[in-house]
Structure formats: C-alpha cells, structure tokens
Length: 444
Image 1 (cartoon, helix red, strand yellow):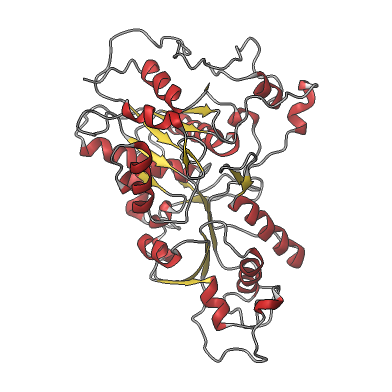
Image 2 (spheres, rainbow, N blue to C red):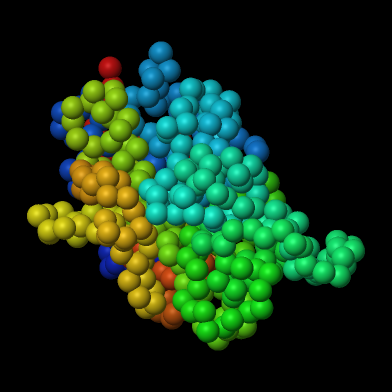
C-alpha cells in the first residue's frame, strides 16, 4: 500500500479509493505494508539502499541534519556498511572519488567511490564511442571525467571555441578580433555527450547546434538534410534541483529543453537522443543494481538482494524512476526465460530506445545487467528537498490530473502511477527506520 499526502493526492487526481493519505510522524515508523513488522528478525540483508544526494543528504553544500544520524545506523563499529548502499545522483560535474570524499566528510562514515553513481556512470558501458572523437558539454573537470569513463578523444566546448573563433559571437565582449576561420582542423566529431548544465549556455547551445547541423564539422555550412544527426548521449534530465535558495534552481533538463527547441525551430525536426541516462532512466537503475550486487558479493552475503529502496526528494526523477524500474522488474520476472533488452530510456511516442547486445552497450555489460536478481524497487519520498508536502492541493481533484505540469523529460510519458511514492517520510533518518522495520532487519 502506498501512502501519500493530501497535496500529493490532489496532484495525482485523488489516488485509489480507500487509500490512507498521511505523513509518517518523525517519532518512528509503523506498519505500512501487509505482513510487515512481524515474523523472524533478519540479520543478513536481502535489500539495498539507493540514496539520492541533493535534497536528501544535503541542500547545496549544507548537510541535512538527519543524514548523519541515519548513516550511523547503517554501519557497524568498524565503519562497515550493514546493508549494500549506493548513492545515485544526477550530478555529473566531478569524479566519483571526489563525491565519495565529500560524502564521507558530510556523513561521518567511510564512502568508497564504488558506492557512488554519477549520472554519467553508465557511459562506461558505451564502448562503441570510446575510441571516437566526442564533444563534451558541462562543467567541472570534463576531460578527466570523460577519460575516466573510457573516452580517448574528448573535446570540450572551450577547445572547439578556440579552434573555431568565429562561431561564438553572442557575447560582444568575447567576440574574437579575427575575420577569418582558424587553419587548424579538428577530427570529425562523431558524437555529442551532455554531462550536465554548462556555465555559458549561449556558447554551448550555439556550438552544439553547429556540430549537429554540420555532421561533426562545425566550420562548414549547415546542411539541414543531414538527418538524423550524429549521436547525442545525455546525462541528467533534472529540470530543477534544490540548493540553498528557497526555490528550486535550473538543472540540466532545462538546458536540454533549450537545445531541443532551438534545434526544432531551425530544422523543423526533433532532436534525437541515442541514450538518456541518469534518473529516471531504467538504465541508471540497472547499473545501480549491478553496483548493489557487487557490494553484496564482496561482503560475501549469500542472501540475494531482492528489494531495492530508492530514497529521494523529487517526484519526477526519484519516484518516477524507482517506480518505472519496479514495473520493469515485475515485467521481467513475469517473462523469465525470454531475452531481456537493456533500455536506456522510455520512448514517449518517438520510437523505441531498446539497446541490444549488438547495439550500443558492450556485450559483457549487457550480460551483467541482465543477471539482475531484484524483484522490487520501492520508492521512498523525503520532504527535505524538491517535494513540498505543504503545497496546496487543487480545488478540483477530478481535473487536476490533466492540469498537472509534467517536469520530466520530453521522451518520458507522464503516468500518474509512476509519480506516486510507495512511502512518504519526513527525512532520510525516518526512511532508514521505516525500511529496517519493513524488512524486519536487526543486524548483529
């Protein structure tokens, strides 16, 4: 049974008849699912945690107080985790080790880089592109990130701007003092990788469009007949994210909306993505489950990890993604024995995005992902980030579902069932208490 709030019920058009809708009190959990809270206590985990970071553990650079308390319950006296834990963030502006160091400092427990999944982490599987010249967009140590993922010929927007100084002219103060193109030719750009929101949007938008409309030769004239364009792989579809400000801030999803609309306005055609990764894509959760299984194997826990608990603050990414993956697991388990395809995104009426072993993902990786053992992925929504439990519900709940503004990506369908969390709790500490209770978990 799922529990929500009146504001959430208004958002979703009322929910199921007879479903109780109220927030768990901070004082502790109570049984929320039939059969939970009773029976023999478990000392070995058959479940794992997928924690979002922004809005769950921190707001910007400020730790959320409940986070440190929660993580003291997740480790033993030697600092070893009692259950497998993976941090699944849509951030992509740093290396995993740096994020692990930040989390270790914030939470007061040792975090390994192998427990950290950035939005771009699944790009390790896209070996088809690793030897190609790719244009990378975002911020932070982009070349280091790209090379760590396996790309051998990444080119940044700034490098492209330097080699083609006539292309970036929106900012008149940065207009180059030259009247001729550079004589230095770069290799053909064979793909565009969007890691995250860049700093100078106008420069990035201009040069990415140039690359797409010239089939990888940005110094050449546009050729609109070159369609479909060269591959675009995008990480992190969050429209907004929570920092220290009182209201959410623009995320990479907002940048993608700009890019998609500019491309369509110029060409009359849709921008196509070879792959979309980061929450809520199924590929992200498949990779996260692989990391969970790896941790369990390293600790020699014999019991299979059957249930994943995704703890997040965003209905349109954390909850949508967890529920989408749960649906995928249920369908997969109902047709065991048939070949499973790895999906990088959900098609929103724009064609299939299934990736087979002969397509984008390396064969060995597909075998790893296809061996998933989990049967459920449960969504747990916290109230310390994007989600606001005090949002006023629409007056007309019958029509609210058609009036809901969908903040998910263009290529994902809006399904009201996918944005309804299994559980709502005040904060991450309450989430840990709840999940231990549901799993009858009492580690030694």
